[in-house]
Length: 285
Image (cartoon, rainbow, N blue to C red):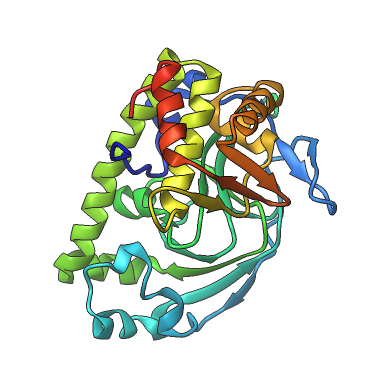
């Protein structure tokens, strides 16, 4: 299979004036049964996550990609200065325009980066999985948050406070190397996303998004289990479409035996075949 470019969270599309090219959809609110209901969350949405001053054990966070070049001792030395947070499904961790310069590491669960128009319509950017982090843009420029971060299931996070981040900026080349590489990936990702949103079909965008997720989840490069997989409504937000065409494309892929849905897991049975579908219907990898 051809190498697939990694996908980084796009946190700055709105600030670049490109909202119109992003996914537009009514916000899905998750009910207790796991179904999506179309409702609008007001700007004053409550955030009631629990907070613990100590950031847990080093084993919880030292494998986060932000620390990939730092030694075990360097990471463990940060422990007493980190904050551990827990949020329930549907809670908002960060709200657009918040003045918060911390960086958050995702340990457990899944998050969605999004934004809402005045009408209540949703702009979806990216789903975040364990090992990801967010908040680096505000940590660098000191400006308010550019997107909302919402828990799509129960989550556990660790927060690096601003003072610690500034110290790492000045004293840790290894920390800065990881951050700069990820910012470069962010820029490349933005270019790819804009191309997809303007030049390829919805079906192709669905296939590309599935291949992105599979490339992260795969252990052998041939098959993958995406768990928990996004709902059809959530996937529609991510690819700039509505739920119905996304469902049609997933059914088509299932008919080709490329994917299979089992409960909350999506099995990608043949990543090579999925990549070939992307190229066949007009996409680029």
